Length: 215
View 1 (tube, one colour):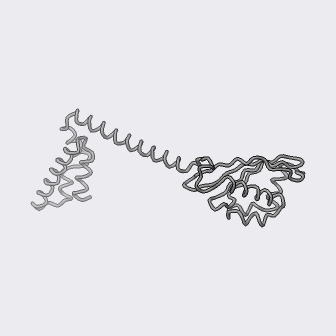
View 2 (cartoon, one colour):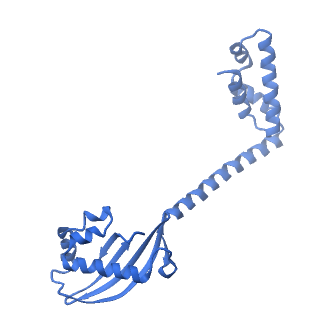
View 3 (cartoon, rainbow, N blue to C red):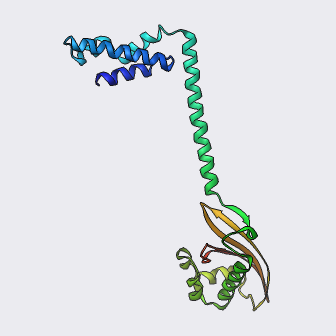
């Protein structure tokens, strides 16, 4: 440890105002510099002055109790401020990450007609079993599940005989914003001969299928 590190370590432990710390720091540095010019080594000077804790405690004994209480209060306030700021930043980060819904009519990226048409097209491809065509409309992460096997398991889980498609219901669509990325999320109930199925489909800004849930 050199002289500067020694002095800084001492002043950090003294419970007083910043201006008082500067005075003490200046005093200590001047004393050490004087003794150094007189031929003493920094190691000997530090050894003779005492440990960091001892020197700091000796200064604290001369600091008025009121000033020490003020120092402790200010230090606590700084800690609380830092914690509060960290919590605010955390809340902002979580808010930024959480999805937020907007009315599709207010979207700058999607239109009701565009998304509804894409939803119906995806359902038609599913009903036709044209998974190759469906994969071409999907993002890379979705393509591995858009297979005859995977979709067959999903369909069989609802019913082993859906029958032919009879009609599409009303499409309900909203815009979802997450991490500055925009998605269109829509739900539509489709009536088949033997079952009614609700599809939830998600599309990214390029209108590529990014999510599919069937119930």
